[in-house]
Image (cartoon, rainbow, N blue to C red; front, side):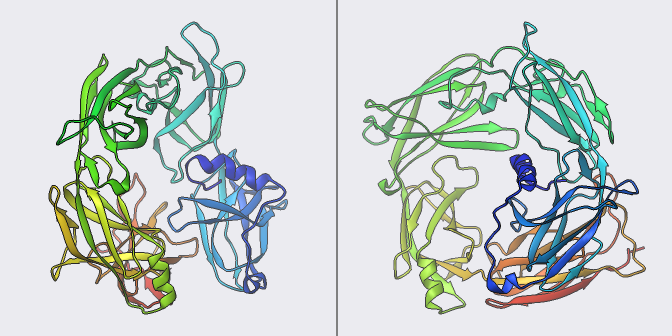
Amino acid sequence: MMVCSGRQTTLCILLLLTVVITARPQTAASKTATSTISGKVTVGDKGLHGVVVALAITDQYRSNIRPTRFRATTDEEGIYRITNVPPGTYDVVLASPVYIATEGRKSLIVSANETVENINIALERGGVITGKVTDSDGRPVIEEMISVTAVRTTHRVPYFRNIRTDDQGVYRAYGIPAGTYTVSAGRDPSSSAVNRGPEGGYQRTYHPSTVDPAAATLIKVTEGSEATNVDITLGGPPRTYTARGRIIDSETTKPMPKTKIGLAMSVPYGTSAMGGVAESDKDGEFKLENLAPGKYAVYSQPPDDSGLHSEAVQFEVTDRDVEGLVIKISLGASVSGVVILEGTDDPKIRSKLLAARISGQIIDGYIGQSHPSATINPNGSFRMTGLAPGRLWFHLQPRDTFEIIRLERGGMVHPRGVEIKEREQVTGLRVVVGHANGAIRGTIKIPGDLELPPNARIRIAIRRTEQVISGFVPPIEPDARGHFSVEGLIPGTYEVVVTVLGSRRTEPPGIPPAKQTVVVTSGAVADVNITLQKPIK
């Protein structure tokens, strides 16, 4: 099964089936590598012939995937063998949209001139859901996007594939993992973003004909099953409304023309914000269209160098248009200080840091222009304006090679950010930065007398013990052989914690966490071996 994030699933399958795939350029050293990866692809106890098995490169947290030219096709016994593989971290992916990998993702960390065997992949045939989408008059709805959403599933890789109705309004979703699903068509009210297009389309409707997700009929899918007549009857487009208001200077009450507007919408899991959705006219007036019922906040977006900011104005759309919104713009606070590179005097590294920008973010629920930024001057100094009151946090852009270790002011460390007041001029900040060029590479060993429960998951958490601000690295999982690798680490001492988790439907196996301390130095890889212990009785 393809292991891709979100909407990339279909694209990745197409890339694997394409004859020519653009590979990442290899260095002279990697071209001479002769590592081999082999295994068997099975359905039940039988090998599956003619399946393309390929290697893909993903980022550290599996959010993006890029196919490579390294691949092979299974023989009559289902065996594949990929040769001349350079060192790297890969996902083993299959162009088999009808089948589902029963164990989820297979990842591998491959060293130079290594023979990796028995990377076996067990598949099961996915289920099918099919039906017809019609409007309230019984006419077929053509080219309508269908969403198949899991309510419960034991598979770790969620189902996602672009599905549309054909010229008869019929759709067919295939390769679905066993589980329970809802099926819907149309758009969510919150997705009717202002000024993103004319009104139209259908409101999100669940099988058979309800707009309430809680009232949707659940569809059960088992291995190789086919659920038919999962039809959907769509109503008319969702009712939308308009919000009007004006932007003024908080001191003079004069209108603020040609000022961009941002909008935040309340969604089930927080707030979704969009910038540049509208602009005030010559009289400072603005209009937001196509708003579905819901809770919103609107705010101005003055230029970064203006020194201005505005608090968000919250409002709710019910069953009528909203009038009389007033956004007040005022002079914001400012902060100034210096960015200090710790742990190295390398002029090349410092030059790279000075090419970055430093951005600020007001956190703790602030809604508005929350990411003003500033240039880092040749002496490391910076000044940032237009800040709202609140707790200020900093980031570097780009942030892939550097990390903020701590914030200092007046000889004190501020681990949760710096509190600033309305129009306050904060000076003397020291933003201490480290070069994130270290790495940890390790192996998790399972003793012969320790048997992990079926579907057990191993999670690896890594934390920098000395770091004050955010020494936490998002948890990762080992590859198919128990190997793991984490890059982009600040030099220092880290604690590595390995935890064995149960599946979603089983209790934790009771295996105690395994911990080990490791020291990471600049530009080097620290090796660590961790052995799991037996469950505590």
